[in-house]
Length: 458
Ligand SMILES: [Zn+2]
Image (cartoon, rainbow, N blue to C red; front, side):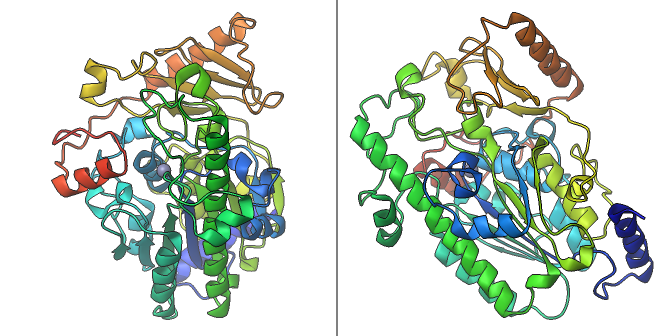
């Protein structure tokens, strides 16, 4: 019997018994940690030149590391909504920050609370505010008015964990530190030679960031790395707390991100820097994904996987590992066969740019910010269709930093990739926004962090 067959048998027994009795081929609990704005190539576990993520590196070394994990929209709420529903933002109607998750969505937390899990979320910034609908299914949802550093979030999460009894739990922790502005504590900054204060010092990315000197860009990147290191330390503290409570062995631990970040790569062509949401390059889409499996799962404890996977795959994977069938209309697929060393057939990953606000549509702040834009990532290529810019085609494995646009040289590949996008778009209906008005205070808090939002019609 394969590991996966054994797992499924264990699940059947678990379902028949109706309660979790330990072992049985399933994980008891789930701890999901999301590091906002964390691009995979700036983590040391993915080969970055500086040691930014020692604690996550250790999880990856002893567990499973996914080398080709991608977001489906480089915006915070849409990406998390995709993570929690296995639906693409386009189908969910959550195509930008401030566009609420519809109450009709069936979330991972709803699925788990129905099964008797204690569910709690500790988020660090207003894009994930409860009034934006990501709280569905969470019995406890803890959030700051605008944002807070990760050490405060993890302290509150661990306090909640200490109050739990013997039952199963789903704990979601969101760390916002690697999001602009970068302002890590001094201990983290000095490690990377980053200056104090807010970095980068100037920020009007939709119009022009080209006034950032090379020295300022270098400082801002060092400050970004410092924030990642600080967030990594919070991950470590959460794992230490889990261990101290004797829960580590029963808990499926997953660390990922909602999307990456453009640093200074696009200053020269577009005057764009230190942000995300408007471009669909690999630096904004490729995310870290590591999993630590409980021994009860009877799956290989570790593995490195280069198959393309996406945020949509998380919910069906978690449900299977927790011993629960996926009853939601998941667009993603379970990664358990990969964890079991069996492999899954390669599938492209489709990503979409955030929906522009009405104001941006009427008068784009920059010429490149007009029209819709999608990308598709295949095993060999990363293609961004023409929106307000010419199409871009990159050799995914040969040019991971995407420095050479091969669109003009490989028109046949461009045509093939565009057909993929056209077919995907045609078969994935554009859902209407939920139409739920958002609290003006939430919109104001979003704007204070630099998010583009639309008044009362998000
Ligand atoms: Zn984000």
